[in-house]
Length: 265
Ligand SMILES: Nc1ncnc2c1ncn2[C@@H]1O[C@H](COP(=O)(O)OP(=O)(O)OP(=O)(O)O)[C@@H](O)[C@H]1O
Ligand SMILES: [Mg+2]
Image 1: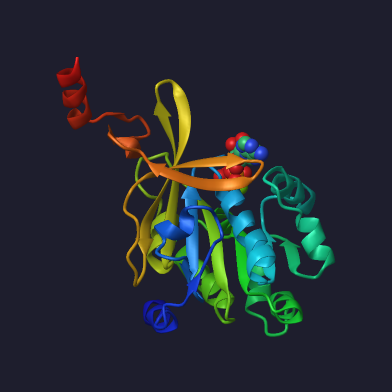
Image 2: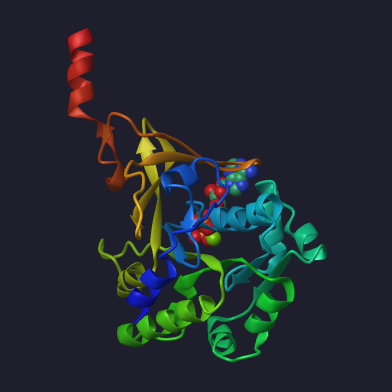
């Protein structure tokens, strides 16, 4: 089964730094080699930015060729979004350090199970080490049946991990019921690392928050940290000190801080 394979894979607990400022520190050095991490969040929280920067930094700072599989954005849009955070993906492609596959989930699922298919060829041709999939939510277009969907996700991720690569995938939060959707629960169970992004409202402005929900076989930062996106890329900053209810998206000053403020009045 996937679980035991996953622990066998991660036995050496070798780290793959994301290169994203502050995030590797949260992850105790980085992602686990030959594992899958999911970045979850609502639309616009920065999931794609994190994935693109993971690939770009891998190429630029660690000499690790990358593959981006996108079910969502035309390559042109992807290049534009990456440029806005400071990375020229087109240049990496020209130098054969990056490949981009833009396809549908159903077609890719077939390819990934087919020896010598486009996935195998791409991985081998440029010795891909890092893979970014945007997004797993699109797999839900293949089937509505929860058991089948989980099977598909399992096949998909196992297909990726046949090679010695480390993958970051994205998934949209389903807020409708307030609970995790079946797809979210299924994916959360089979991935090694879960990174959650949230919007939080503080004093009438909206901030970005990031936290690590799960990091298999490893300790990690349990705090909820601020995150920013600029033309220089993604940056994980300090923890939200003295705030309660960050996870509700509507935090208030904690009782401890309020008491201190009243005391100082
Ligand atoms: N140079 C920049 N400076 C400031 N903010 C930026 C910059 N580039 C992108 N952003 C912000 O990043 C956010 C988009 O992030 P991203 O596309 O990674 O979100 P996402 O979670 O993938 O969303 P979706 O679910 O819609 O795909 C936008 O809110 C945008 O305002
Ligand atoms: Mg996106």
